[in-house]
Structure formats: structure tokens, C-alpha cells
Image (cartoon, rainbow, N blue to C red; front, side, top):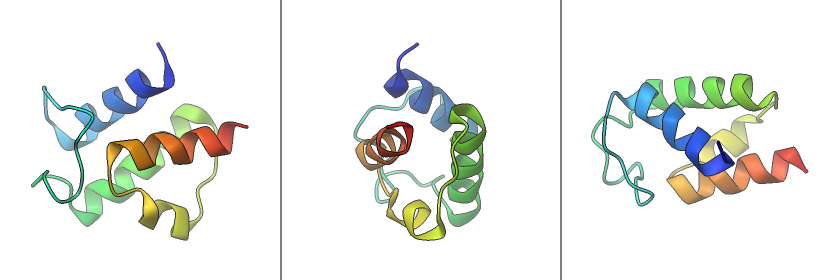
Length: 75
């Protein structure tokens, strides 16, 4: 499973949505609230064995930014 698929799977689980697309963002997903945002960040940290700073977590406002942030941490 590639990085994008792993992130998508975590988002599906955290937001409780079966079908989500790569254009998912805080603006177009009702379930993307502050609690689920922090849950998602925690799940991503565990899944990829990384540590995210509060500023980085705040920047992860859509799928592509989440993937970019994880990619930058894995290098």
C-alpha cells in the first residue's frame, strides 16, 4: 500500500466515511472537526512512526497537504 492509500485509509477510519476522494478538505467535509483532526494526526504519527509539531498539524487542512507533510517527515 502506498503512502496516499495509507493516508486515505486513516482518513476513512477517522472520519467514518466509506467513500472519500483526494479533494477532501476541512472545507468540504462536515465530519472534519477539531477533535477528528487531532485524532487523524495521532493516527498518522502512529502509522508512519513520525512526530508532528502543532504548527504542522494545523497546516494539514486537505488531503494533498496531509500527504505532503507525511512525505517531508519520511525523508
